[in-house]
Image 1: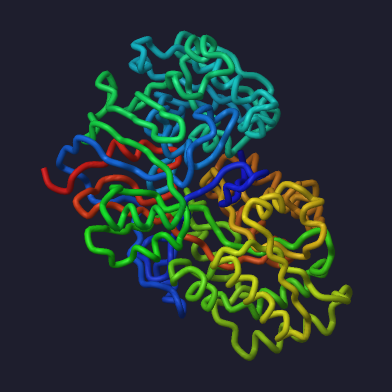
Image 2: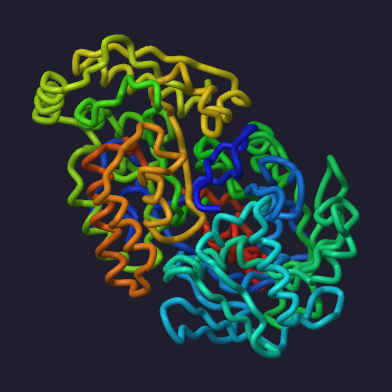
Length: 548
C-alpha cells in the first residue's frame, strides 16, 4: 500500500515503529543542517555494528499480536516485523533505504512499458521445494486481487506473464517508476503456491506453515502468547547467528519494564516515548536510523483551515522545537515536509538541499515569522469565523502538538479548540470522513512504504482520498503523473522536488517533524539495521552477540 499511518487503531491499515534522522546526525538526512533547539544530539546510522558471536535464542517484543501472518489480507508492522525474516521479496529494501534485486537475478526494460524479471534458480522454500516462475506469478496475481492489501500497487499493470522457465514479464499501461520499489515491499512477497492453495482461507493463521524461503521459518504460533522463528538450516545465504527468535507483545509501559529488567532482549519501539523512557538505562543500547515517518497536521473537509494563507500562517508560528522537546523527549527533528528523509532512497544530496530551501516551517519561529503570519491572516480571503477544532487522542506527544497548535492560533488572532477522543476512536479519523466531520485539523503521523518522495506526494492529487482539504491544481497533478512515469532517477528527483515545493506552498498538510526508528537492544547484542528497512529486510539474520 502507498500510505499508512503510524497508529494501529481500528480503521487504519498498518503501524510503524517510528523512524528517521534527527538533528545532529551524521547521515544524509540532516548532516550539516545544524542542531535545532530542543532536539537530542543523536548519532544516526542505517545499521548497527556487525555481530560476531552466536546466540541460542532472543526474546523480542512487538507492539501487539498480529491479526494474521498473511500480509495480503492483514497489513501491520507487527506482522511485517516477524515475516521480514521469513518471507523473501523479489526486490529488497536495504538498511540505507535503497532498493536492489533479491529473488530477481536480473531485471531488464526492453522499453518503458515492459519489465522483464529473470528469477534466481537456487531458491528453496522451507518445505524443500524449489521456487518456480509459476510460484512468482501466482504470488503477484494474488497481491493484485482487488480485495488484497497491495492491490493499489498494480493499478498501472496491464499484464503479468510467465515468459520463460525463470522469467516473468510485466506490462504496464504507462511507465511506472515506483513499481520495483513496491516489489521490495509486500507487493513483492513470493509464496509457495501449493502451500497457500492447500491452506486456503486458513493461510496465515496459527498452526499453518509460512510458505516462504527466508533465513528463518515459522515454527510456532501460540495465539495470545508467542510466535517462534527458528533458523532455516537449508537457507542458501549466510547462516544467521541467532538460532531462535521468540516474539511476544506488550504495551509501551510493559515494554519499558521488560527491557529495563532484562526480560526481553530487544524491540523496534512502536512509540518514541518508549525510547525516551529507556535512554541511559544500564544494560541497553539504543540506535536510531532513517525512515519515511513524519508528524504532521492534516486539515480536514470541515473548512476551518480551508484558506491556504491561514494554513501557511499557522505553519509559520508553530513551535516545532518546543514540540520536539516536550512531546517527544527531543527525539524528533523539526522538519519542513510531511515525509521523512528515509524516502530519499536515491538522489539524497538533491533532496537534502531542497529541504533546506523550504522556509515556511521554521523550527523556532521569530518575530519576522510572526509578523508575516499575521499579515497572511489579515489578508486571507476565507478566514475562519469560529474556533478551529483540533482532533487528537490523549497520548502525550499528540496532546503537546494540539496545545502548541492552539497557542500558535492564538498568536495570529485565531481561536483553537482541542477535541480529544479515545485511542481506538482516534484511528477512525483517518479512514472515515464522517468521523472527522467535527474537526478542522488532525494531529497525525504517517509513513510511506516506498523510499521515494513521490510515494507520498500523490496524496496531494486532486482526486486523492487523503487530500481532505480539497487542494486542486492541474499543474500539480500533471507534475506528479510525469514523475511517477519517469524511470530516470535524476530526472524523477527534479520532478519530485518541484512537486514538494508546490505541496509546501499550498500547505496541503502542515509538517512538524520527522521521527526516528528506535531500536533498543540488550547491550551484548548487535547486528540488525537501525532503519525502517526492518519492516521488509531480514533483520534477525544479522542479529547476534557483539563478541564471538
